[in-house]
Length: 382
Image 1 (cartoon, helix red, strand yellow):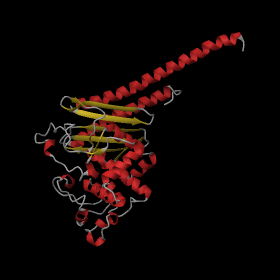
Image 2 (cartoon, helix red, strand yellow):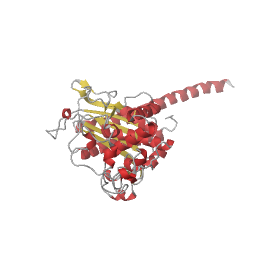
Image 3 (tube, rainbow, N blue to C red):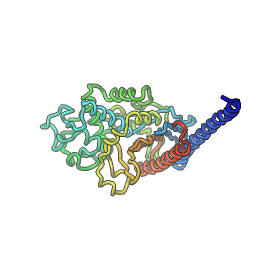
């Protein structure tokens, strides 16, 4: 190599080196900006709604991970991202995942009849109950009749788990698969069928499943005696007092008895749901696209929101006195997010949907931000 080449080569190599450093710094700045914009968006949503505490986590296909905790767990104690909170009906995601795994292994196919899974005879069940499949229960299309008043799974001595035969001895309100009607009892029956198939308590089945996917975590049965978190009454209902409710969390395990951090639940969903499994969940009829409202489409486990030109979003929410829980995952796996709060509102469905929309907008903006970064800096490893 000539002296001139060596002379030129030095500055060129140094230029490339400093150029790479500058590019890395710029990428880091953009990455930080995208994440901070998302945190600010979620923080604003919580503050606008005057939530006492909110925990949030998002996992993005780019590898980006954003988590946030705002407000207090209890008076004078800041809420952290490590503090487990009740996840209410997001517990159905855990039960649903266990059912999907039992289907894949052949232990309990989704098309199994419930009475076969529970070893009940057709003569012992009410009209139509012998036709309920596991799939119908996961989709809230079992046809089970609903009792007036407080949901049975929230009562001190529900018939399920333990006395499921009594539930199925009653005639159905309509044929299985005919219509979507939300049913906590349906998920309790899925839990009973899983326990029977595995010869193990549902808590052990789900605990083992979670550990296989993400190792040690905060996911566990909620201890109703715990005082680590103060669950606040609805500010729009003077009669609401979460302290009055003594739920049997072990009995309502399959439908609403777990607790977790937002981060660990998002990690589990990221590990357990891939595009193939998500495709299997989208059984909502096409007709529901023409109906207004987010709750008109329900597949297996999740509500399905279809937007023309965009991938579908699978989402579900949960609500108990003092608890709001939300989760969403896109059909293409672009992002997953979970939000948990220690307060709800009397009109919890509208309240949840409002918060869902606010956080969803932040997640979409974050996705656009990270996509822009990838396009403008294609050489950066993501």
